[in-house]
Length: 307
Image 1 (cartoon, rainbow, N blue to C red):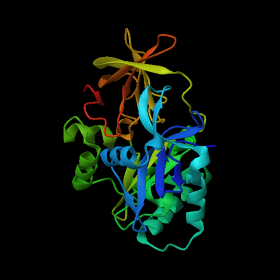
Image 2: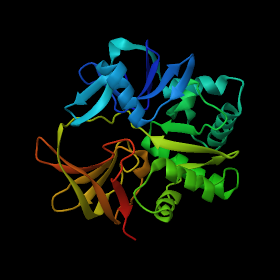
Image 3: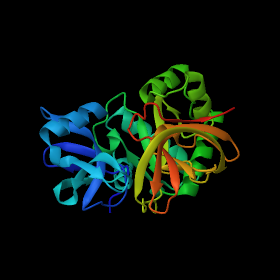
């Protein structure tokens, strides 16, 4: 079984990050993240990845009728290696740390275990998943249980208060802000992020926590309508950290806001009023949702609490 946040590798020396769980037409929906150049793995951005595949491997480009979007996709038959976050984390925890990134990962996991978190419910994604980390790499952890994920957030909050972990400083927030290319001010970005407790610092290295329920899957087909900007009250935030994040709304036309970009996970809480910009989609039953994150950078798309 393939899950979002898994990585898949092909014989051509390409590594893709899965963006949804399961298969569509026998393919893993994904996005190119690394390619092998002169024997070394190179991380690539969105525009480069699209252009590269268009010119060299167009058979990995795919239109998904389920989400009405152009994505990358790899047939299961073309996958030579399936990188699985849970298995990789357990393997890394058994190793002698060969670099500072792995040492920091093991230290973070020891803190979590000491505070009662079940490490078997976690995995590691990003560069550590495929062994291409460098001294500046972040630690990207994914949790596969919603209750355990929220316990991990509370644990991070407590460990920061005890100074066993550290909060991001102004420079860290600025770097994260620039990387995310948000469509609102830095102060607004920091205000939203500081109350989530899904990221922090360990030994001056940033770590992120994300949630993926293995039961999550897209079952409805959606068709894009128009770009829109709406304001509404959040009716339910239970799935606000899921992938995709979902915020049920009290709105005359739009049932929910759904975000496929990690920037807006946990962005708003029940009872808060938000402004959101994205693409309105409709399913076969006429239900409408506003999607934020139609591209990885989500330029012009956002969720913002109206304080």
